[in-house]
Image (cartoon, rainbow, N blue to C red; front, side, top):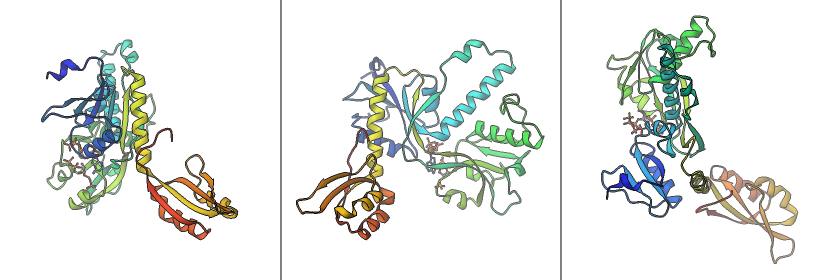
Length: 333
Ligand SMILES: Nc1ncnc2c1ncn2[C@@H]1O[C@H](COP(=O)(O)OP(=O)(O)OP(=O)(O)O)[C@@H](O)[C@H]1O
Ligand SMILES: O=P(O)(O)OC[C@H]1O[C@H](OP(=O)(O)OP(=O)(O)O)[C@H](O)[C@@H]1O
């Protein structure tokens, strides 16, 4: 089937085609009951049960497609959105400097909006240097060679440092982009951590999660440029706002279900005030009377990461029969 000619009337939703965000993104789509079958090697898949087409793209390109309004929704990293925005600023500044900028360009609905954080893909874009070297501060790298895949964010970072060193204020009057940098930013598309050891760069700007890659390459972090995690983004003028809202509600429900469990227990009514302080629920706990005089049953959503101390505290105020149930999905919570 010629998929490209079946996109008419469908909301376009971009999903990372590979890499760190792929499997968690597919889990979210499954939880939101977005059903599709992706043909081998095809980067477009029609959703069977909704008027949506999934477009599988590199995470780094998704902010461009969404920001230009070519795709309505997308899953990518916050770092990629920041890098894209910095690139748009750099391009606009270059066009202004060359006199090519027109007032109409300001009116274009460029850029994407964050719909929600997705609770996975947490990492940091950090400035890294050889662990045994002399650099301890970002400023020590001014005038040096920096390897990175995040060229625009690196340019803005070192532009800010250079401005500070020169005693100039960074404000709208002195844009971070379009200046001639003393620091040389070298664009690398992968394995950035090898650049220092191979003599290509004095420092790098690269992502760190566990820190294993950085450590294995003999590097240490000296500053953070961006704290990132996966986000759902939408274009400024999506083709079907109602469908965007529906997808957002479904995905929000899946994320809440992943973060929370349902905790149920019995407790003497006299201890209820203490117990409900421990489990206030998302809005409020549900309390029902038991057949046994003076006892109530409580059920409340509890964040998974707080579960063990919550159960300890409940037991210490006299709760019994404490049960914890997984939540499969939620809506409106
Ligand atoms: N180690 C990590 N831990 C968590 N999230 C990460 C990690 N590395 C990258 N990410 C997130 O995943 C996004 C995509 O990175 P990833 O390296 O998987 O990209 P990719 O599309 O496979 O590209 P590349 O071919 O450059 O590796 C990043 O922008 C970031 O938001
Ligand atoms: O702190 P860590 O947990 O070690 O993760 C960090 C690494 O993960 C990412 O690369 P990835 O493995 O996705 O491959 P890439 O270098 O080809 O982008 C990133 O670019 C780092 O190299």
